[in-house]
Amino acid sequence: MKKIALLLAVVLVAMMAVTGCSSKKTLKMATEAGFAPYEYYEDGKIVGVDVDIANEIAKELGMELEVIDMEFNSITTSVNTGKADFGGAGMSITEDRLKEVDFTVEYATSRQVVVVLDSNTDIATPQDIDGKNVGVQLGTTADMYIADEMPNVTLSQFNKYAEAVEALKIGRIDAIVMDALPAEELVAANEGTKILDGELFTDSYAFCVKKGNTEMLDAINKVLNRLIEEGKIDEFTLNHTAE
Image (tube, rainbow, N blue to C red; front, side, top):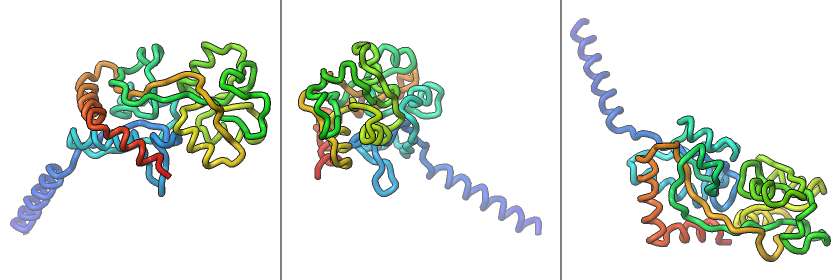
């Protein structure tokens, strides 16, 4: 019996060793999956431009990617407290965010546009939102920009754009300010809405990492620079915006 027990113990240790060697470490990305085409749900899975990029980062590091969906306003906190390794959600570099986290090179440029109802006759240009009730996603650049630059606007903050468009439909707000590409997806899915010609301002996107985590920052920048040079990010974007 002792020999059998010893043999079983040896086999168990061997199996644990094999399992340990074959398993990969997990690379965790924090995001807010309501920002198509950058991150959104498809068939119950989070996909998008940022996820494609994140998969390339994980591949470079020999790790398995895990995408964690959360409120946009929680991403920097999650990264800086170590709950996630990096954050990506169409995030722009601002002075306030730089106090919390470090940012990679910018990998995409976007136009911030205004979404209104087709029936709206009061707002003809992006600048006409001055003095109106405008919906934004909490913690986004649009949120900060309007708060700083347009004091006459009444800001209505939402955790997700899906909530904002429902508020627009029932007349709780007059307009939504958001990135052009997600705006196109939003309007396509919500009859009776449209994007005004022109833009309110231009924005650029980067990923964020924990403050001082230069190893992760350098690894992501290496992948981003390669993908930019190869034209892969444009390719990813086309893949997620093609009809």
